[in-house]
Length: 137
Image 1 (cartoon, rainbow, N blue to C red):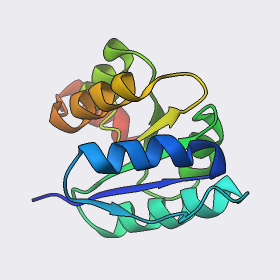
Image 2: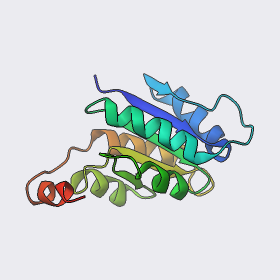
Image 3: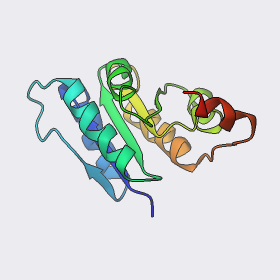
Image 4: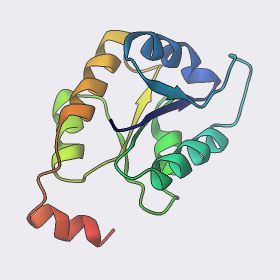
């Protein structure tokens, strides 16, 4: 079973808790309250865990999802994708072999977030010509 890690900042705290109650076996890396925190700290913490656990996935949530994506992508071997639709979520896995999905609590609702996470976790990387491109990242 692949490990799935989740983290947020204060702006993504409520959505993080909704997701952890709906999807089993997620490892919650925090925060433990809605008190103000700095998203780069949690993005880095989660990205390091995903990078050191081969085949694992991560879920990062902030207000827009953008800050988490930018911060997580600073870690070697991380491909964090800001996902907001079924199509871009599927393509992030098929073509980019993304290993972290980032979501914006202020932009999508709980049901959409859970739907996108399920697509992300169930879509396999196509490889082929896409592998050559991913290796260049």
